[in-house]
Length: 86
Ligand SMILES: [Zn+2]
Image (cartoon, rainbow, N blue to C red; front, side, top):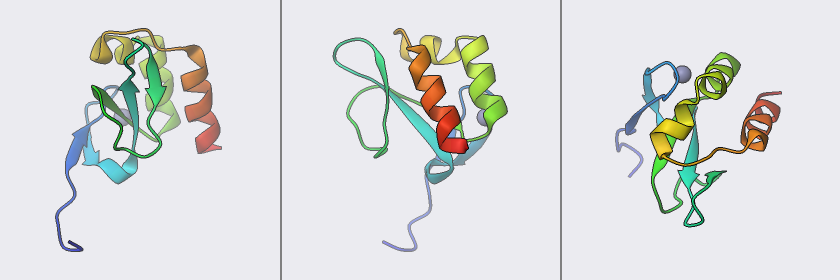
């Protein structure tokens, strides 16, 4: 399994494709809200975001995650993402 190529995921903010290990994953929960998927394996519709602060900020400003997931994204999500970069 070590040689398995990494799946590329597209950032919802800048649309760059990167390995999943270099992205944050958001997932839509059954409750219809977005959550951070720390494991990268949560069930549900997912959206990927670069770990770059600029991508996180742009995604929030342009409501890209809302559109990608068709659900509301609490502001805390972006706060958490920003803190993980700190
Ligand atoms: Zn990006």
